[in-house]
Amino acid sequence: MTVRWLFAAAHLIALGIGLGAVWARARALQGPLDPPGLRRVFSADSWWGIAALLWIATGLVRAFAGLEKGSAYYLHNHVFWTKMALLGLILVLEVSPMLAFIRWRTLAGRGEPVDTRRAGRFARISYLEAGLVVLMVLAATAMARGYGAPGR
Image (tube, rainbow, N blue to C red; front, side, top):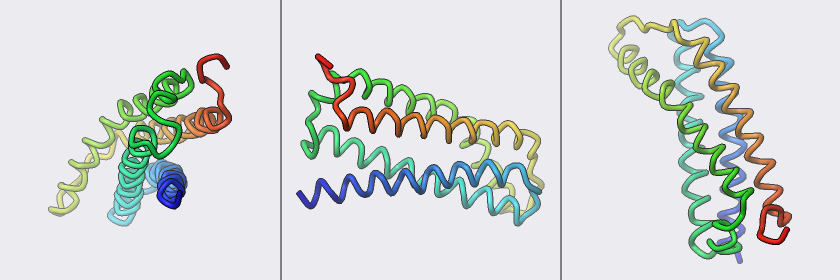
């Protein structure tokens, strides 16, 4: 029982970290992208990545390690698949910013100029990802109340 609670708590803590981080990243990308501004972008982006790893790891354990309702419940629940589609969309959207920020970090670390012309695009992607996270929360709370299960 304690393990289930701890995994559920970690999953929810990841939500708070992730939603705050992706929103902060979007805001930082709209500000000045001087060295302190880039540090804000990189910090928020790092927290977004940590949250994603925590969400995915705890979600997999909760869904498929027998801690919650069991994998059959999740695999036969259309709301679960909606939630996974939203996660997949976030991951697809994240590819371009992730690759760019890796390059930006490398250049900034070497003291070289960083081409930030796509910052506005990345800010819009970040806001969109925040909205998708909120939709995932709606799906998760629906599942917790039995919606999407066969026969419901």
